[in-house]
Structures are given as C-alpha cells and as structure tokens.
Amino acid sequence: MNFKTIQEAFNYYRNHSLADIEKRAKEIGSIIDTDATADVNSLNIELDGLKEAKANIEQRSQNPAGNFNPITGMNFNQNNQVPTENVFESTEYRSAFYKTMLGQKLTDVEQRTFNHAMEMQEAERRADAFNTTTNSAAVLPTQTLNEVIKKARTMGGLIGHVRNFNIPTNISVPIGTPSNKAQWHVEGAKVDSEKLVPTAVSFSGYEIIKVFSISAAAKKMTVQAFESYMIDELTNCVMEAIADALINGTGTGQGTGLETGITWNATNSLTYAKGGAPAYTDFTKMLALLKRGYAAGAKFVMSNATLYNHVYSLVDSNKRPIFIADPKNESIGYILGKEVVIDDNLTDGNIILGNFQYMGYNMPQGLMIEVSRESSFKSGLIDYRAMAIADTKPLVEEAFVKLSEATA
Image 1: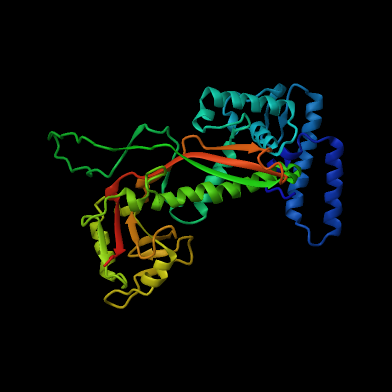
Image 2 (image 1 turned 120 degrees about the vertical axis):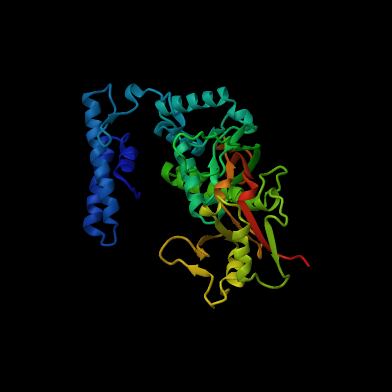
C-alpha cells in the first residue's frame, strides 16, 4: 500500500499484531534491497509508521488503560470509549462506516461508535430528511465529504469559484452587499449612521440521487481503496449535478442556475449578431454595466468552445489581443484584467461576467450512503445509493452581466 504520511500508516497498523508488523517490516526491507523500481520514499514512510505502531502496542501493553498516539503525543479512545463529540469526524466512525459498506467485521469500539452515530442521525431526523428505506443508511464521514468537495473544486468549472453553504433549508440568511465607503469627517460635525439593508437568501431542499453497483468482490477491498473509489464516484455524480445546476438549474425540482435564476434584460445583458462574434467593445460595455462594488472580484465565465472560437483571436483598436493567457498560474487567462473561468455547462456563445461570491450552493446535511445486497442478487453485485439534499441559487442578481448571441 502507498501511504502519504506516517500518521496514515500508523493508523492503519495500530490495531495489527506485533507479528504482522514485524513480518511487514521484513518484507519492506527485502523489497528495498532487491527491487530497483520500488518507491523507496513511500516504503520508508510505511516503515516509520510500522515502528510507531509497534511502539504504541508496547506502550499499551505497559499501560492498558491508555491508547497512546506517539505521533500526536495524545491518548485517543482511552478505555475504548465511543467518541461523543464530532462523532462523524472520528477515526472510529470513518473506519466503521466503510467496513459496514463493505460488509466487513467491525471491532467492538467501531460497532458502538457506528451505533451511536446512527442514534444521533435518528435524533436529528437526518434519516427522515433523506427518505431512507433501510437501517443501513449512514452519513458520509466528514473527512471524506471534505475530500469530495475539495476534489470538486479542482475539477474545473464554476463550482470552484462560488460559495459553499452548510445551512438549514428554508431559513433566510442575510448576505452582505457592497455599501457606501466611509466619509472624511470634519471635527465636531454630526455624522448620520447608515442603515445597511443586506440581501436575504433562503435555500430550498432538493434531492440528488445516484445508484451505482460494484462487484461483491469489493468486500476484499481495503478501507483506503474503497474510500478513494467512493470519493471519485461521488465527485463525478453528485458534485457534477450541482455544477450543472449552478448554470442551468431551472429551480423546479432542482437548484436555480444563472441562466434562469436572473431576470436578463437591457439593464444587465448585451447581445451580438447571430452567427457573428462579440467585439472588443462588447466586453468593455459588460464591465460598464456591472454595478459598482462587484467588479473587484469579477470573473468571465464561458465554455471552452466560446473562448477559442469567439474570444481568443479578438483584438482591440490597437491590434492587441484582449485575451491574455496565464501559463504561470493555475488560471486560464485574463480578459481586460478579469480572470477567465471555463465551464462547458454554459451554452456556447454565452458569456457571463460577475462576482461569483454572490452565487452559491447549499448542502445542509452532507451525503447519505445506503447499501443494498438484495437488489442485484442475481448478478452478484452490491448496490450503493448516494443521496444529497442540495440547492443552488444566485444570491444577488445585480452582481452579474451577460453577453449572448442574438436569436434572430
């Protein structure tokens, strides 16, 4: 196995026997000595983790009441106690969750931790909110959910530039908007206070469902391998659905997107000739239409085809290209000093300029995973159902301007 950190290797081996640890250490030594293509750095990390795990076992044998982690310098899960705070963030719940999904045997503390987490779900009515049908449904561990969101933000597109909320549905939350700047003050003069009127936003709750099946042989997978597979699968299905809704969501049974969630009219949109291409002045007009206060963090969003078919070759009146590629940083490039974001969910020919901190998506309860070993009985598969309650919405309409191809 390839471990990235000593902590990860230690957590994997800390419940193994001394015989298994010593056997694996000898195997690593043999691999390093005989295999010229071996990943020595990864093996050394694993070897250090084995040493720490061995020291931990010896420490526990001398002090059975404690379960000492030599890397963090702290006792964890003393007396095999079930975590009572942040249970979904605990190592015990994460291990119990994936073992349950794989049908593997849980240790005593893992079983009690999982049972406690399920009781918390029932107390908080999480299961009811997701309309689960079996008692095997469980909330995705916090660490895995964070990895899913982190990976979604690196897959490109608008989802990496909007705000991510984790607030209850149907509750109005104030969102601050740009306000007037401070004024120079004449000493002794009376200053009137400014009444701020924030914009309120309320997210609804819509279900996202994805069912995927894998072979029953998955029971032999390690927890780390199954977690990696789950992260990829959830990113590709659930987060892709949210990414599309940010642009095209209709607001009926799904999130609301930029295309339909904003009233586009002469005050916030421009068009160019059908079958033609936008001009340099169209982009300057877009910047002029964007209201004061939103321009500082504004970005252009367009599809890859729009960038290379309509924008890449545009020049200003001095024959200078308006699109400047950025090979040094992670961004695509800039138009008139504003970053360009590529999102192929946007219709070709359409370009949106806006401050995307005023566009967001909400996942109030994370992700729920449910497993069924009966539905694919004849095919020998195990079905997994991922469910999320989510919504997307433009938070402030005046933060966006659109340029599109005329329909006639």
